[in-house]
Length: 336
Image (cartoon, rainbow, N blue to C red; front, side):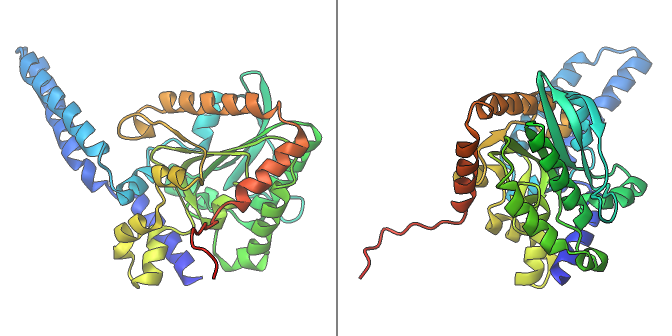
């Protein structure tokens, strides 16, 4: 429980921090803007100097972003300007109608859900949502769902199944909320229940990890026929800070933990934990949300076209086997 609180607090602090590895880029951008302003005010031609600096900036960007460490990718996944679920919903879907409540306790604003259209497909969207400022983050609980959020999700997934509508899930959470109230209302049971029931939902489920994919908070709505991840997102059993707090008793070891956890998109694809990596603009999705949304939409529609043709019994069997393979170890040693 202590490590989960470390995750939650560390997330809130890191969200407000600058990305150290981006500072050379930011400084060069400022120099270019200053030159442009100076040239405009003094009416002098500095186009050659500006072009030289812009070429240097492009080269520097490519060099930095093509060689990111696992921890640096975690930082990009948490970038405060990174698009959140509602941003993507507004860009790729139409007619979104949000539905509320778990019919047991209340409405969890960390998880939004509702019906919408993506191209010609009518779908149910389940999405974890963070806030842009402190007030909104408090309302959204920093994207950390309570039990009622997971119960709302499964309630509406069943409704979608009865209506024969596919489900699209956006994951972006540091983890399920670890507070006493959440535990008292059955946090672990709510997540476990969703894991069992999502395997039985007999309509296509497409899961997209758009930012953070933290522990059971992500997996509680993350059982799908296709699991995809944005290039700079991560998906892990625990946050790097939480892992470092357990293994090294210090969250300062988070960069080492991030490497050990193999949580990046490329690591997850190699291990067969995700089905596809969705590309982002150079530097992260926040540099061009429209382009990223277009890439996400293409992947969603591609898999929807494939999934709706699969018989329901095969769809469920394939989904079950997909998650049974997670963590499987094969040995070439002969039994004695």
